[in-house]
Length: 173
Image (cartoon, rainbow, N blue to C red; front, top):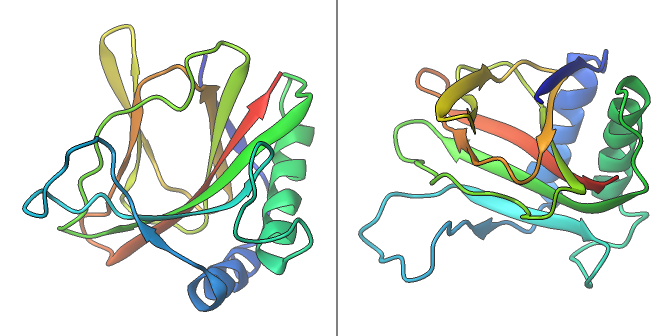
């Protein structure tokens, strides 16, 4: 149900991508639920750089999307499941001590899969609920976590490092 893929992408490449998204990113504050108030905990920041169903911030040839498609192609080449298309790319940032995202699902339909790609090592990660049990997957540079998008999950901020960067893909089988 959950598959872990080591992409082999070097940390130096990921570090260049982090610098690119820090410099060129158009970040928004994340909200996990409607009706949130200013007094609630920070949910992190996000940036949709690609969505096949709507106009996004960057065209497909922008360096942010070029790097994302490079990562996606490597992940896709290493997994058993075949995908017909990439639905969206969402970059995420979480901060130590202040970011507390809520559990959520990415899509109800069983044809969607989520890939969480970690851009650097840190003690944050991803929690996924499977059969009433919550599993934690630590952020490891160059590693992707693949799971059905209908599974309840959330990002976890780091506890010792200052920040966590990841990119989430949603693909269709």
